[in-house]
Length: 265
Length: 259
Image (cartoon, rainbow over all chains, first blue to last red; front, side):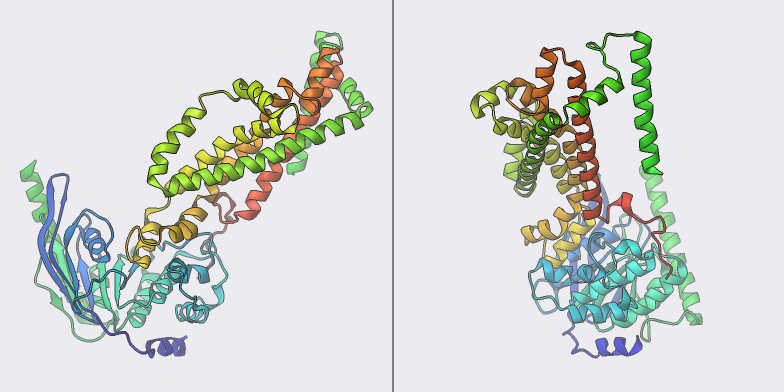
């Protein structure tokens, strides 16, 4: 498996593309969730957006993905072109099509675009996520962790410079989650990744930069920049301290939003 | 086990029937007992088989045509918003006219032969198939559509490909429910058509026997029709289960394989 991973990461790297988001705003039922958010995503880096539920993380990600949503704002790639069509998207649920085999699921993008289908590449990616023997299996035959690995393979198969992940591992048990974080960090290295999560440890293990989005209206704290390359080992003592710091920031922001909500009511 | 249960149910029904005829002591031309009916069934087996073949052909043809037209309309309605606005109200309104009411017209237009009965069965099957398929096509998981939108570079891009690869297969289980309903109601259409005007088929035979107080033959024809309807339903059901193995009710009990 390791040789397979290195052969994939050894592919000619895609030119990394940075992203910038300007003036993002979201209102819901008359209440402003966030307003005038500016955010830059460095090329080839993993940026984590950490925040409590309901803060608009998913809306922000949908805005970047170019999906219809409630949020407005301007998204630009660092090379001046639109990011639409250069984005891969991974969701909290695996979104595997239950009627199709894993191989057909992984090659869905090519089939939708009527492009030639790279079966060998798909099989190599399935092997890289440890599912090489399951190409013909349907998703129902797999465990939740395996399905999410297949979803990761499908995301990688798209071979896009920008990868957006919406709490991709939150539905998994802790052990599977840690394993998948390691796998994803290795396979996604060199791409511009925006990872939305509510798990501080996940952000700290996978991110180069961690933003905390919290409060109402939500604002971005000063970002936390982390040294070294993800995935950071769980044994890293500094992660524990940083996790405490992030949790403190999240809870204080949470208290503020509670207070404002009470004042408003 | 399943076969045993079915056998017990059939025997029970026959026993209840025999009991009712014995208690009421009804004359055999009002309510013949199971013995008489089975005798009639055997005695007229060639006649019954001939008429049953006609009715079966009408039902199967109607089921096929109703499925084809129903599915095509559903796909059209689901793919084009303008079509949805114009076609859907017409389809719903068409159901307000009972199929019994147009049976004489169909016989008038299409004649006493099989065509009017096939049309009848087609009409009666069309609606459940179209309605369930439209419903299925419009209830595609939002997540899948988002995924397809990102893959194709935006919502509304390559809509036909998304329809073919995502929405259509996702709607097949809904279509299957429509087909099951269709298989169950298809005999109604054919038999009504035969009642209104025909020279062959089980419905014709029933009317004919009834008029001549051959009540046992009428019951035999009814029994033949019931058996055919049940066999048709279970055949369609088994076929659909085989064709759509990912359907939720078909998942193996141990759906989660160990890592």
